[in-house]
Length: 246
Ligand code: CDP
Image 1: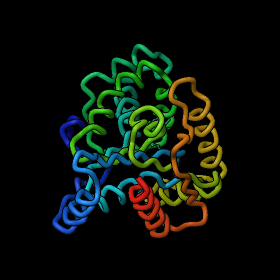
Image 2: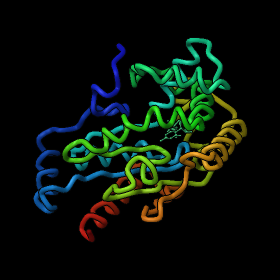
Image 3: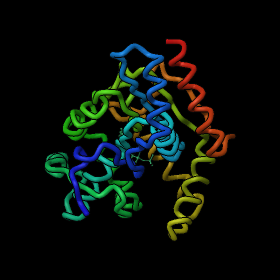
């Protein structure tokens, strides 16, 4: 099934979570804040830092829609790959941004070749500009949203109420990526995975446009020593603390 991402609010692998208990929690949050407030939560961080898992959990907890912005870059990469297009050609890559429809659960979106292409084409300023409005419209929707990526707190939603910068050591992230690949039946060598993580970090942080960096007002969450449940609990605590302080 293919659909245009904009037509579905939560396309980060998680459905839109708006069950009763969640909307009750959300309603309480809404009562505690000014009526015009929109709760926008920006979650940024490097590859395999756990930002996607944390962003999905925050969206569930606060009853907000979630966008995994990396999927947009992956969708452009996959389209280009299927066309047999040249990722070294910015104009061709830009053409792949038109009418971008994709199935978020397509396993090829997370395949290694597509990950590599996504990482390189995301450095094109025209590609980033082509995907900007769609992300900003998502962040502007009434009630708020959770977005995760590389430049949410710095470029897409600089006014977000809460910004988290989720990180972990390259070694821990490589181990997590290994487990992910293994679970998908794609075993890999640790050294290759670590090397790949390091070169993606370098590309993401070194590019001229919207490089990966912690926004000045973002809260740093290092998950190196935390398991998934601890990381989620800490993220929720940090967001609640920031809201209470606002
Ligand atoms: O899950 P992982 O962190 O490995 O990657 P992702 O978040 O799905 O992003 C895929 C690629 O898109 C990354 O290598 C980034 O270079 C790029 N990206 C970006 O430039 N800006 C974003 N807001 C999100 C992703």
